[in-house]
Image 1 (spheres, rainbow, N blue to C red):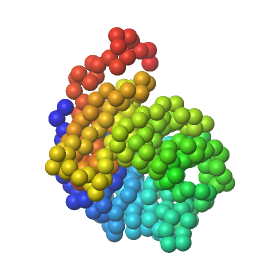
Image 2 (cartoon, helix red, strand yellow; image 1 turned 120 degrees about the vertical axis):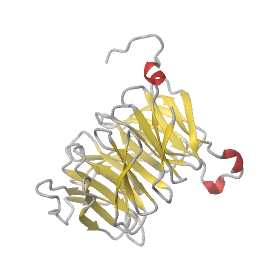
Image 3 (cartoon, rainbow, N blue to C red; image 1 turned 60 degrees about the horizontal axis):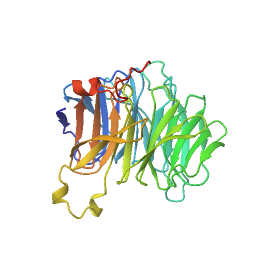
Length: 334
């Protein structure tokens, strides 16, 4: 499984995202640039330029027509995937930390940072898909301030107008975006900040990672904890493989806390855990700094990881991965 090394960022990666077909990989970083790459060979297709601060988050719609990004210059931007043009820009009092499309690409949810007297806010915008995409409404469709600890990650669930959020305190919650009320919460989902939240293909469950060194799978309807994966390093990202029963976890101690740097070179690993048996099954080395973000190809044929070292590594799985029998010699009926 030889990795393809994507070198297009000068600073650490913040989020990477495959499109629905999996032929494109979008990446954003602290160097203010969003890149798009061909998945199969790692060639850079282009950039989305215009942000004046760290780009914290990106998401792409299911048609690979629109891209949304959130950045530290307090903007949410809508881009044309094909041309790289910025179609629309929303401005806020504080930085945008997370963005996500809903299932039918008609809405975008975004979280803005709690800073300078402004509370953490969750806004939902309608995305007008008519015409060239430049005719968007400036005002949010819904806006509310989540109570308690600030939200760090979010995504739309299967239920209309319900988002699932992860918080700084480790709480995971469900909010009705129309009313802003908290429908359900699990205060003890994690004991430290929730760093990532990724949904399963059918949006019925999600995986969260946290600085408390634990990743968990939750039911998105009632927040029941289904599985728990306990590691020995702070986690920054967790992803699900669609065709095999694995969870991919990435993290690592911050550079400031690593004293034996020389020994750790290239030792920051992506950990593969068995989704069902809750056991670690393997590790892939390679990054020279903590892994900040992991994404799996929607067809499960490869995965990518983005690190504090500014590199993205794309691993196309070998035959042995597809031939492996994660449940032993039994046939699983789909």
